Length: 277
Length: 167
Image (cartoon, rainbow over all chains, first blue to last red; front, top):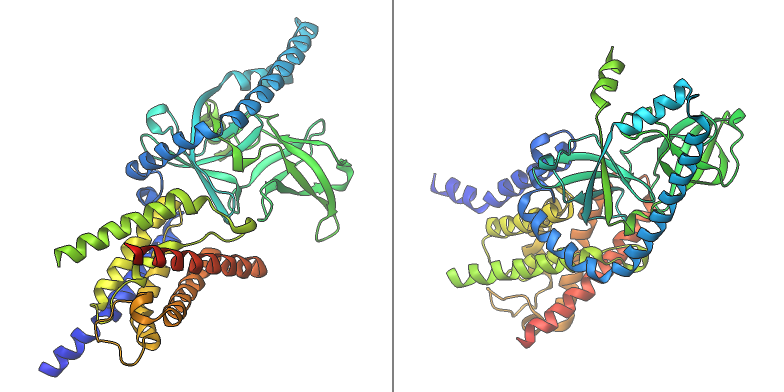
């Protein structure tokens, strides 16, 4: 009996080892499905605060670069505004149904400004933490954009922070199309270069050209249609030879993104419920 | 007892902040990131309670996981490293060493310590990157990532060790 107890106490570390490994495995595999696990990520309050301090410190060092981005973004917006104004003047009194639909869609998007407090681009599944949460009106499944294009999709939310599934994540897939045509596909990241993503299953008769603009299609109810994603950099044949697979140069350098906007899409529930029917 | 506990907690805090605030932003030529938090169990003296080492390893890994969004990866690999720390130490320590030797360059000799650190780090990195990629999809990338990370971690650990000896 004594010997047996001794044996057990000598080998108790194996039991502890197995228990801890099972626990780690549980975290590893259940993370994506288990809602409560948001507490085991950067989105919990303590980790969030620490990373926010750090981000604040780092932001001062990046102000120059950030300024350049803002100027560029401003120019772009100004340009867009001019184009829209011009078009509106030409179309007044004669607005077709489609255009009204587009304008209506944009009207229903509320923008929640946020700052990136933690970010990564080198893993297979990259996540971004931002400093707004459910108290600011953010909910899972909302789109996140920066001045230069799409950044990702909100995946988990705490009162003050949210975890964003970056475009650079093997699980993210964003519905997109070629500007000017209505041919759509899904944008995916295959790892490696954080500035390069791919768009698969583009039909051959879409006739994509290098330099064509790729934008959101608006099918996914996460992003309104027409948000810039990037430009076509290379055109490959798809595996079965029936379609094209496009290599896209991203418009946003996720590695340097600091100021973003969460898109609160008021029509989302309506669209989702429609899709379920 | 309380002293050792406080020392280890302080050690953990320092390693954790070094890892999270500085090293997580470092990439060796676009590849690996040094994982210096494994030093937490590198310093466990011979003959420590093995359950204790496992718990220290797991907790450190868990905290790293929380701060770098890698659930289960660091905690799993740290638990494994904690399991093999004692056998590895026994393997690399000189024969005439005292029973409760504390692993350091001074106590073990530089060569032995380097060998010990390299082995422990290697196993830790193998499990870490194994869990992180979890598929052989980008096999060459994963291996390159692991190797650069391993080399940089070992160098950093030795640097820390030299620094620790001075104090």
